[in-house]
Figure 1 (tube, rainbow, N blue to C red):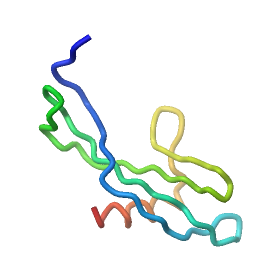
Figure 2: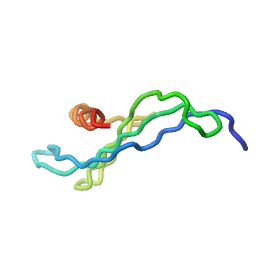
Figure 3: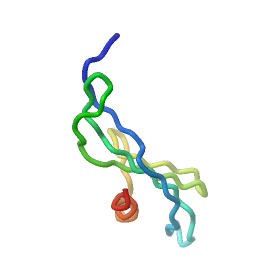
Figure 4: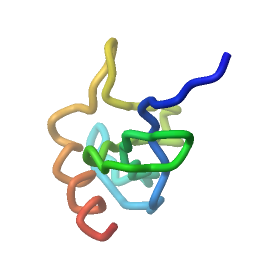
Length: 85
């Protein structure tokens, strides 16, 4: 099947930050994605940023979507990383 247009997200940055989890300071890997509208696989319009958060200490992964979302205490940390990219 051949698509002429669609939506895609591409990773633009990844950073490791320390966050508080259950009273402990643990490392978290935050990935910043840029969403695009594509035409013939060429990004045309940027639509915004999204984030994913992975905590290796407890093996937790958060990404906004239909069934999950990033907890409120970690959203600010993700937005700080997003400002760098």
